[in-house]
Image (cartoon, rainbow over all chains, first blue to last red; front, top):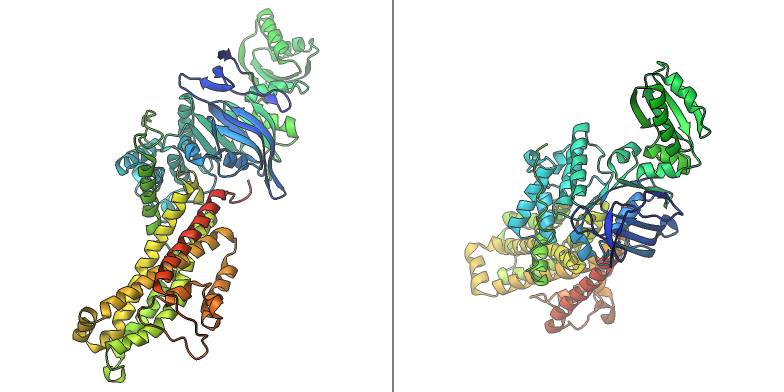
Length: 349
Length: 289
C-alpha cells in the first residue's frame, strides 16, 4: 500500500526523527522522489566499538535522497558512520541498509555506493586517468566501457587537461577532485564524501558543490561530512549532528534551530526606521532583547516565538509604513545549532 | 573547470547480461593489471631486485674472471656446485624476496591508506585475494626464474658457448634448468602464500617472519618429523640434483616428488583459502575519525 507523506523537519534526538522531503513510501521505504525510484539509508540502533573505544553508539537514522551533512568535531564519529555505511566497518550492534541492501553484502552494496575518503592517499605512480580507469576495471567493466566512464568522470570534475599527469604532481585541490571522479565514475546512487571540500579553492569549491547539487537533484544520496560548519550549512538539505559518537540532532538546519524552543532565536532586520520598530517589538513578551545597529537602520531582536515574531513584524511594517531591506535569522546556521546542543562550536580540537 | 553534462543514464554496473564468472574474470584481470605493475615497478620491488640479482652479479663476475682450468672438469660437474648453492638462493633470496612482496600485498595498502579503493569495488574478497596473490606470484616468479636461469647459465659459461650449448640442448641441462626454475616458482608460490597470510594476521609481521626464516634455515638439523613441517624440505626433494646438507645435517628420507609437488600446491591453496577468509573479515579503520 502506498501512502503519501510529508516528512517533518528535523528533530533533536529523542523525538521521532525522519528527515527528507515529500515522498511516497511503501512499507517504510521511500520509493519515489524527484521522479526517480529511490530508497533510504537506514541505521537501526547501530553501535561500533573499537575494542573498548566508542566509535558511534545507538545510532538510528533514516536518510532520504538529497544532500545530507554529517557535522561534528574531530572524533565525533563522522568517519566511523561513513565507513559503516560503506561496509568498510561492521557494526558491533545493529544493522545498516543502504537502498535496502544490507552492508553485509559488499558486492551488491558497492555497485550502489561511491566513497571519497578523507585520506589524501592514492596508489603510487598512477596518472589520474589510470587511477579512475583501473578501479573501474576492478568493478568489472570492459576496457572500452571503463575508458569511456573514466573520461566522463574526469571531465565532470574538470581535470581533463591533467588526466594523464601523475597524481603525485597534482595540487591538493586536484587530488580531491580526482578522488571525487573515482567515486562517481560508476554512477553510484549513494555518494559518501568525507571532508570533500578540503583543499579546494573557492572556484573549485563552488563547482564541486554544483556537482553535489546536480547529483542530489537526480534523486541520489550525497552524504557529506565536515567539521567546517558553515560549509555544510550552505550545502546540505539535512544535517546530522554528532558528538562523541552520539547523534544529537538531525534534520533541516532551520528545523533544528526552530526546535530549540527554549532558546531565543535571533533575527536581523534592516529597515528605514529601526528605533520605531524596536519600540513596537518590545511590546511583545516573546521578544527578549532588541539591539539597534549604529546606523539606526537595522536591529537584532531575540525572540522565543519565531512565528509570532514574524506575524508581528508584518503587522508593524504595514502599520508604520516601514521599508524592509532584509530580514535574516542571524544564528540559524549549524554553528549556532551546535552551540545550543552541545555548548561548543563544534570545531573540534 | 570543464562543464559537461553527466550522463546519468550510464549504467551503475557492468552489463547485466554478463554472468558472474565473466565479471569475476574481468575483475581478476583488472586487479592483475593494477598489481603486477605495482609489484614490479614500485619502490617496494627494489628489495626484490637486489635479493634476486646480487647473486646473479656475483656469478657473472665469477663467469668473467674464472679460469676454466681451475674449475670442475665440465658443465655436468659444475652444476653439482650450482646445486649446492641453489638452496642458499632459495633460503635467502627467494625467502626474503617473497617476504617483501607478499607480506605487503594487504599490509602496505593499509599503511598507505589505499586498500579501501579495492574494498569499495563490488569484487568478491576471494577474487581480490587471488588477484593480489597471482600478481605477486607473477612478479616474483619472473624475477626469481630469471635469477635462477642467469646463475645457472653463468655457472657454466666459463666452459664456452659450444660446451654450454651441448650441455643444455644435448645433455641434461635443459631439464635441470627447467627443474630449478620450477622449484624457484614453487618456492615463490609456497612462501608467498604464507607471507600473504602473515601480512594479514600480524600488525608487525617481522617477528613471525624471522621465526619462520630461522625454522627454514635450521631445517637441515631438525629431526625428520619436524623437517616435514617446512617448505624447504619439499622444495629440496624436487631439486634436479640431490643436495648434501653437510656433516651436521640430520638425514631424512626425501619425500617423493609425487607427494612434494601436490603437497606444496595443496599447502598454497589451503593458505590462500585462510587468507581469503581473513580478507572477508577485514575492516578498514586507518586512523581516528
